[in-house]
Amino acid sequence: MPHTRTSSTLLFDFYMLVVLLAGAVVLAAAAAAQAKDATFTPVAPPAGVELAYDIPLQPWLVSAVLDLKTQFADGLSAELKGIAEEQKGEELTALVEAGRELSAATLRIKAAVDSIGVLDVTFGIEGISRMIPAESAIRDTLFGFIVWHEFSSTPARGMMTRFESLVNRVAAGGKAAAGFATELEATREDLEQAVAEGNLGRIAEFSPGIIETSGQIDAVCAAVAVGARDLGALVDSLSVDSAELLVDRWADASRAAADAGGPAQRTGPALESMSGVLHILVELGELLDVAVTSVDALSAAPEADGNLYIPWTVMKSDWELAIDLKVRVLDESAGQAAEGEHDHEYVGHAASEETKADIGALIVHHVRANEILAERAVEHTSTLVAEATITLEEFYLDREGYSDNLRSRRKAKVREQVAKLMRENMELASAKISARAARAALASGRKHDALGADSEIDALHNYLNAWLHSLNAGAAAQRFPSK
Image 1: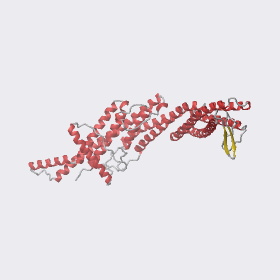
Image 2: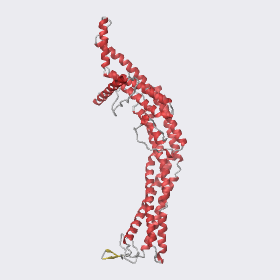
Image 3: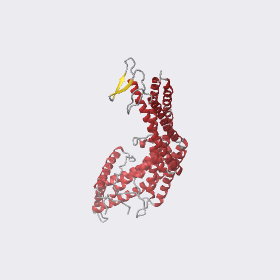
Image 4: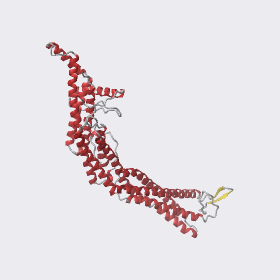
């Protein structure tokens, strides 16, 4: 008896009805087009529903497939580790230093402005920086209110308000940059330790946070650079004809404002280079997790009948993994089979051509492994459907009272009736269509496989379809009435 997994749920019955109706529609279309070798998209089982029919994998076959999938996972792991080890951390160091340098420059700006404010001849009030008379604007306090003495010929209140705002904004940016630099420094040390230990999981874990903090440092440096440029121009304007006592202090503020624009010139390139490496590490880490899931599925203990049964999603995950490698890492076409299926962003900029070639060469292991799985599914299911068809015919013959003792005319009538019942049996029609489609998908996969690396995605897609068609065919055959 073949191994089966049964479920009496209404959901499964509904799924089978959909499969049968889909099979009938495709059967009619195929007959009308006289294209017996036509293929169609298989119906995938709903998530969480037990299968009425599954494909048994024998131990010797599992060993061969597991070896191929392990080679893929180990190869991808080695490439990921190699990329991580090549990351020397120079860009991260540059970003940390830029944050600290910006903080130092903004502190110098604040110190210079405060030193000028010490000489304010007016009353200073809490929360507003003290400032000497500038142009025609003199600020004083009267009964707790700010009073501006300003001549219409040279209005300066707006200039002084903007000056205070820029000083506060630049100072706040410097403080934020210092905090981000401290955070990035701590995470960088953790990353370097993970790289030294070859801990790929930790590398993938730290990378998103490092990218985010580095981006924040770059953004703050860029924003402060704009504010510092405007502040420097205002400082130069305010310092014109300044008292001799304040010349050096205005000059200090001007130099510090100029220095505050420097870090932004280095953070952009450092962020681009560093994030490029970390993005590919994150991507490869996620794909490695998928590859390990396939290995784990094939490493599971066999069931009581000595065979192993794997989720159909293993085939689907392998296909999608190969697409991600082709498009996101290798910047190659994924073939027509993947068109419209995914939204991809290329992250392979930081990988060398040699590394990308080595990663691309790994996909063939998945192709070989899934060809073996698809071949097993098609051969086993085709045999099952053929045997079930014979059993169904015997069931009808018995039900219609067929016997060798009948007269020839009666025998002919019974056989004609049985043939009619066979033609009208929806389960049989669905099983035959799906079995034929499975064989066609396997043949198409081999055809694409023979074309080489440019057609690997299409080969994997066809092998997935062969597996799904086989599941549908076997499920339909399991529903045949029997003695």
